[in-house]
Image (tube, rainbow over all chains, first blue to last red; front, top):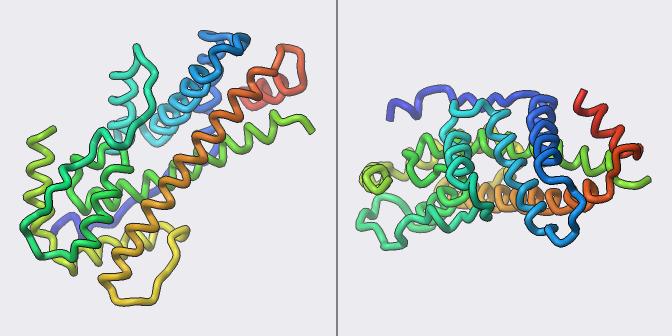
Length: 156
Length: 92
């Protein structure tokens, strides 16, 4: 495959870019919904989680990656309702394929990966590997940003 | 979407074992978090994919947990507290 020969570029922005986007999202969230209503706890958690994924997608370059484009598209669709980012939604049919070219165990693992990476269901396999690598790097960065924020806010 | 999926299905069936192993080895090069395995290439490719899935799930759980903790912490932040100063300094 031609794409298999291309250099896989998984460069991601620095941590402060992710921090900027996430804190901006949190700031906007705080203005929209003051955090002073304990009975809306679950609603607030879901808002923060969505803000984390959306700001991560923006920090990663918005629509420059298939996975980030898929995340932003999903967020736009969900704008009027807060839902969990269900990973079952894009599950490919479990019907066994007729081809025997690949060992079933490798194929099954690749299918599970497709379900986990946003937009993975529509990706050609070599693109899936590239997007997976980039997605994991960005997700790791986002987790670090959130951890720093939690540490900074926690009572000493 | 169904068109793309069907095309992907058709295309995926054309990928040979060797090509999949090659792709997975590329994935492994960029992800030091995924442990090396010393086994046959085919088993190694499957293991790398499985470990990649497990790692993504772990990161998803961490985002969930941190979102929950942030929700609690922001709940207790008032405008004049030192924690609010932390947020403001990070935003500047």
